[in-house]
Length: 221
Image 1 (cartoon, rainbow, N blue to C red):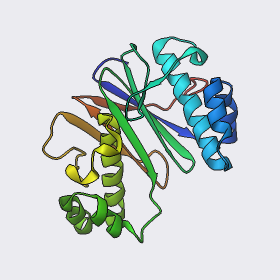
Image 2 (cartoon, helix red, strand yellow):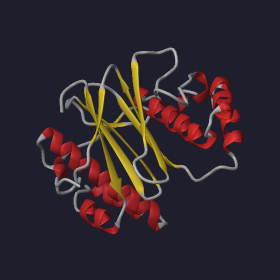
Image 3 (cartoon, helix red, strand yellow):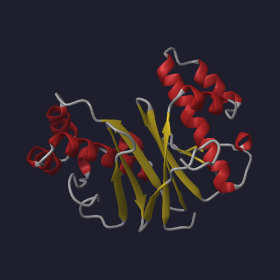
Image 4 (spheres, helix red, strand yellow):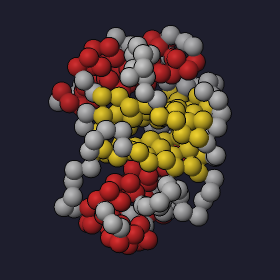
């Protein structure tokens, strides 16, 4: 993977994925997993974290068990000195993982089933221009989730966490994905699985590529 390319991976959170991933986690991650009271969030954490280790190791030609993650002051993980930028997100039974070289990246995925409260959420948290565009869209539900995932991906890429208000910037809800008025960011929206919407945000010009390989074996799917 060269600079100027962002690779996007989709992971189905299955029992098999959890089993494969669990052997890759370090002691602190195993301890964190054990603190989840419910099975679904525990499985999502284990599968996603193990997949992250496996893919980072593949890009860096390293042992996944020997990677040592650090976090910035806002909680975003990174691998010191590697130059590899990455981000993950999971919702329901699907996780997405994004990678780029020396270009900050954020990803977000959401299930698109919720319909009744999207207007309330948009009016409370989104930029007024986004709320109006969602209401005027041909498919307001899809427009809402595209906006939501775009904003979350951008916030995660910037790395400022909740200190960056969702109503302080605007993303396109239809047409080409972008941060309105800021051409220094590249956005890409896609459906990683039926009933899900995802968006990736990368700082700088970039080509997005969806990978179809099996994360833990490398075989094509």
